Image 1 (cartoon, helix red, strand yellow):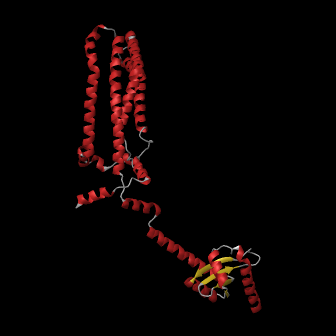
Image 2 (cartoon, one colour; image 1 turned 30 degrees about the horizontal axis):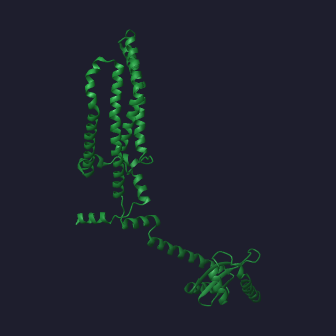
Image 3 (cartoon, helix red, strand yellow; image 1 turned 180 degrees about the vertical axis):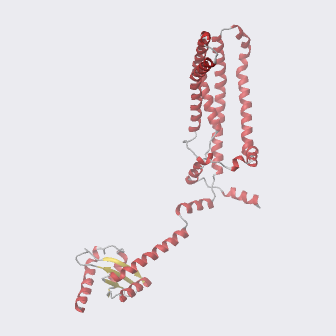
Length: 359
């Protein structure tokens, strides 16, 4: 049953990973990376070293050794002299080899940058018990991915060794003649052989790196494929659960109605339909340029507005066309539209006359 469920789950993942899933994976350090790309870049760096920097480093070391040999009498092998001699040797080695190591490091970074923008993921370096769990380590080593990487490395080693042998085979008869030639010629011949081997290896590794790059992209995309349920869950997470949003909308409308009903007692007049519509207006002569809508509603809400208005002595004026028009065009807590100024002014004037007559 479990196996069938996993199979069905995989079969249902037919949607390409969304941008959010890609970004979440990057934050966790899960990105498609082809190790062969770094190796190809480092082999290219070796060609640069062998073709130019290597000769310079060899010349620098040769000059250093010559100076050491010529100044052999100047070095005393007492405690202070040995320390000075060791420091001198380390300085000469560092001056000759650090540029080479810098080139290799730079090309290794280039191999990583060529596959995507750089990133730092602290989740990858965070301590996890699974990393030191022998069972998990065994599964990683002998699982499908581990066996594939082992087979790929072994095949690459065999192919590289074969190509190296084929390239060096024509040079084998010349090895016997090296005994009688000078160091410069030996260095030139060795450089030629190394460059020939490295050039062939770089071409091979570049082809393997390109294939590994596309495979890693395909494998990563397949692993992050999404099902319809995943898409819906992600949409809910981003946009919010429709049920929760609906509930919040209901709460907001309820609170808005409560505030609206609390403002009805301050109204100057309530214009009614008389039963289906009710619009409560407030107007303070001299302080307001136009009446403001403090409440409006239909049916049950309109009935509630009329009840509150009656209980608080707010006049009710029946004007069916005006009540409908104000309900459709006016907004709560906003002045009435300009086109209704005259009709509303007549109603408010009537209400004020009644109030003065009552006084």
